[in-house]
Image (cartoon, rainbow, N blue to C red; front, side, top):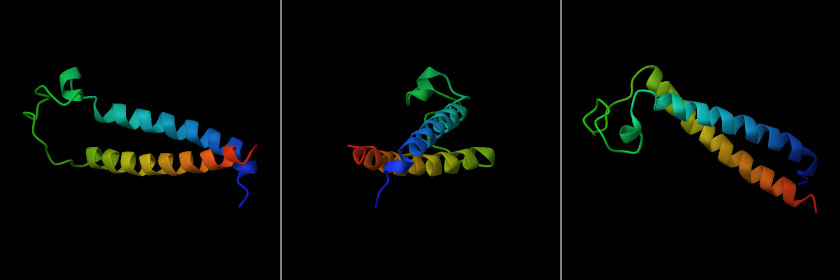
Length: 85
């Protein structure tokens, strides 16, 4: 299968997915300080895990979906640009 014609489009998709994934990750950590972001500190939850509800759960699922799409697109782009030689 020749993926070479799709290589530029896959690169654009890669950039869009990277920006969207970065925004989603930053939106999830908006309520915690640097210590909570790195895994320590109080962060309001006492350092323990808690159940995600509502918008937080949706953001979590969307982040997982986008990360899977990002990974798949990276593999396809790698294969497409590898065929360019």
